[in-house]
Structures are given as C-alpha cells and as structure tokens.
Image 1 (tube, rainbow, N blue to C red):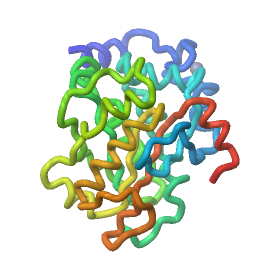
Image 2: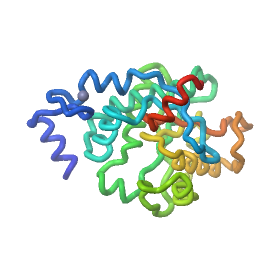
Image 3: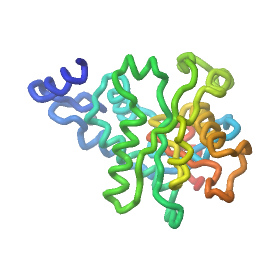
Length: 249
Ligand SMILES: [Zn+2]
C-alpha cells in the first residue's frame, strides 16, 4: 500500500531532492556529486572486529550522503536506489580491481532484520545491490546479486549498542540459505551493505559465508576453492573512518 501510494504520488506531487530537500529533482546536482564525487577507498573501523573482510566505501556518512541513505532506507524513496547503487558499484570496483578469471562478481547483500524489512516495506541493502550490479554490468563487468544470507534468529536493534555489544548481538545471527553455497561457488563473493558502522554486521556476514563454504579460519588469500577470505563494499562509512584511510589502499 505504501509503495503503491508513493509511486502514484511521485507522479502528481512535486518531488524534492532526497539529499537537501531542494524542489524539482529527486537528487540535485550537488547531492549527486557528494555521492559520486569522492574516490572510493579502503576503510577500517576502529576497533576492527575479527573476521572483517577488506571493505571499500564510496563516501563519508554525513550531510547529503547521510540524508540520501536515510531517505531511501527509512522513507522509502526507492528512486534513490539507482544513485546509491552507482556509488556502491564504485566501491566494489575499487575493491576488486581488475579481477579476472574468477567468474562473475557475486554481490551478497547483508540482510536487514526481518522486523525492519516488514516495517520499511523493503530491504535497502538488497535494492542498492541490484542497482550496483546493473551499473557494473553496464560497465562491462560481469556481476549479479546473490541474496543467500538470511537472519536465523531475531536480533536487537543495533542502534544505541556499542561495538562490543553489536558483535555479541549479531554473533551467529546470519546463515546461508540451503543450496546457497553452490551459488556462492560460481564466482567471486563481495559482501555489500549500505552503511558500515562498527563492522559487526559485515564480520558476521563473512563468517556465515565462510561457514557455508566449509571454512572456519579468518585467513585471507585465495584458498583452494577460490574464496579469498572476504571482500566487502559499502556506500558510506563514518566520516572519521573515511578520512583516516585517505591514503590507505
Ligand atoms: Zn540536493
């Protein structure tokens, strides 16, 4: 119902920028530049949770970027998914470079809590991942979304929890759906999410993927099955993590 209303109302009511509220554009030039203008880079939360994959981010989570992510996630402004997907695609490219010979890129979205999906009417990371895969394919990169992760138990809302509490809250919370490991073997896995905060969600997602593929170590480097220990990309990360890693490739 809500999605239906949004689509109809978008046709008849004036739109405004998801980043700054300026009228007549879903995303104005300035806010688009904030989202796409930065150089995607490797980022590390501090402290860094054990088992966190190598993460690349497209932008700092502030100002217009923060507003656009929230408009998409919480207010259901689904038309912003394309621009967010383009930013995510940039972060994926920064992390995977000239990957060759390892099959297509498999973008694996970190699932939202079921309750959150029900309340919002959509799963933001999955939607942005689909847009990113389309953007990568248009750029000649074989990429597809493999949404094989799911929550195996309810978790508390992460907001308001510290880094350590988030890890405890999420430990063992995700799993790969039955048969998902076969899909994951078909290419190079890149875990994707809209936002990196403490890294607890991505670390848990990486653990679940490793578990499904029969690996329990957190070692990096390609193993016999071609799984490289984990790579991840996000649209945005806290401003401090984005700046600190400015020169870190
Ligand atoms: Zn704007």
